[in-house]
Amino acid sequence: MNTVDSSLFGLPEEILQTLTDENQKAITRLLNHKPVAFDFTPYPQKRLAAVLVLLYEKAGRIQVLLTTRSKTLRSHPGQTALPGGKCDVDDENVLSTALREAYEEVGLPLDYQKIHPLCILRPFVSLYGLLVSPVVCFLSDASLVDNLVASESEVERIFEHPLEAIINPNILNEEGSSEVAQSLLAEKGSDDWPYADDLHNTTDSDWIDGSKYRMHRFRSKAYAIKGLTSDILIKTAEVAYGQEPTYDRWAPGQFKSFLNIASLMEMFDRSRERYTSVRADTEGSRSASQEHLHKN
Image 1 (cartoon, rainbow, N blue to C red):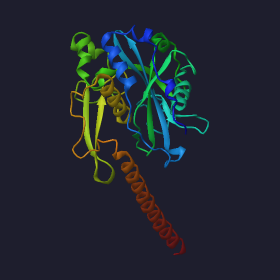
Image 2: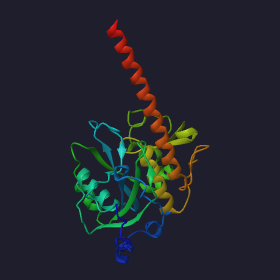
Image 3: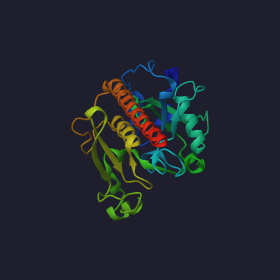
Image 4: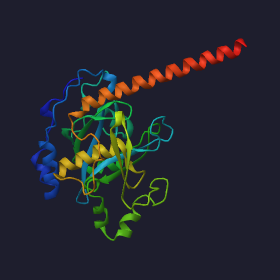
């Protein structure tokens, strides 16, 4: 998998100047973002994936494009996601992967001149041990979003969410009265938002080798934004707005440093090996028991 040519990143000044002052600053921070270098060479291509964080300005705010996955999919059915998936052998780099997946899932045109790559964030580790690279791009023609078409086999719904609300959920109440703002979101107590909290919910759980993980959930127009998607958007918003979230980001004992990623991957592999070994032993014992029953 090749690195992305740095000359592909950028946003013409005349486009930047059309944005609000605050949004100009946010996009400029993303353009200037340089993640810590990470060596992907030890990992086979089947362990690599990419997602597209597509941003655009609408009603004075930076929005991010999101989808809800089809309920017929085997993994994460019905959940909110960023367009993306595993890297194919024909993909030149993670930018190619992210754009190809967006084309397949929501019909985002390939080689569209109004999609401007801004940066690539450091990789995230998925539940299945994939190294996921978030590719952040800016769409200078927001009207295109209204013409996107969801893939029937992969996507149930296309929607948007204010990026800043990921680090400060309460800005959703600034659009008007709290009641009016929340009426535009998923109904409280519904399957999409079954939590008592108005806008943001967290739970802490054990993860790999005794580490902890804090699950963040954000109320949206559709299913809750959570898990890997929320983690990626928190990082995107932190970079864009140059500030920490208004809530406690980390669980006690949770990995925070990018330098822990390689160690995390190693621990994930060890955990998977132990699981495979235990499963093999269990199935072997079951087979032996069944053979004994047949003999008697």
